Image 1 (cartoon, one colour):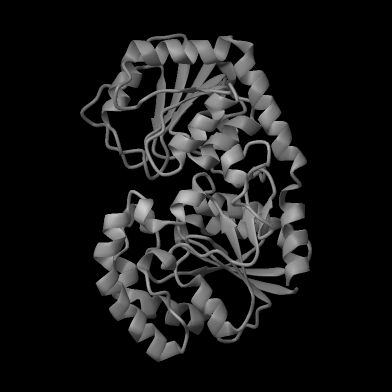
Image 2: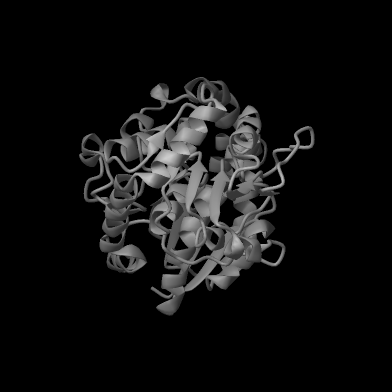
Length: 384
């Protein structure tokens, strides 16, 4: 294996865990050509890959699926045009990357999938059970028209359901968790096609130039709060509750507010609120956290041994938070019902009672023991 094509949707939740995989591949002498958006270019190049731009915005989970229905053929032809002088041994893609299977088929090379989401997969494999079931059905007629255009132009097989365009299981699938963290009732689903490699431990490039990191070094206690880049604006009421709970407290509160818009609210003096927070750097100084419990944020908190309170808002977050509760490694609250006093009490409890942190450390060790990116690339090389 000397050269691979990496295709990914342009979201932090899918790009960030891929960077360590890219770095391990390039360290072994494999050239990686990685398609993404300009937002992630610096991180991708720092991991060792050659960056190529999509000419459409593929942040589909934030911006919607219309781009796939209106420009599907254009998206595929643009990628093929940019790689017409390249020869690849394999395609590696996020499981959610549309057209990845079809591009691998067109290029007549094997494909490997990478799972940034794994909890609840058994149900998600049955699209009628998902929360988006109605939306998938409504999109299907428009999708089939675009699929027909693609089949005629490129002579590839398109799935008959739109759902299968954004859910691409391959003969080999890399999963970022450990057997210990996987709930018992999910384990039967993850057969020999799935390789569990532990959490993403790669220290990705982060911009700290515009962040007052010195304030964290001097602070008595640091509380970190993030509700993610997609779900950050999902429930704006929660920000006022956070201000009420921790304003004028002894905490220095670092809070991410990605495209939220808090102009109407008064931010307490002990808060640092920015659209972008260099999360891994901040977590080196954090004593406790509040999170929406997205997989990457959860893993970063566990790996940095920061106890936290979960306010899951959607996707796989409720299932991940419930697993933490089962392992007595965290507290889960309802983001719609929680009040400021309850939030403050939960943060104090998870920080003070040692069982939470001790159990987080057990999860962390299971991640470290799972084999990491070395195991992932060994499996890819063996498969190729």
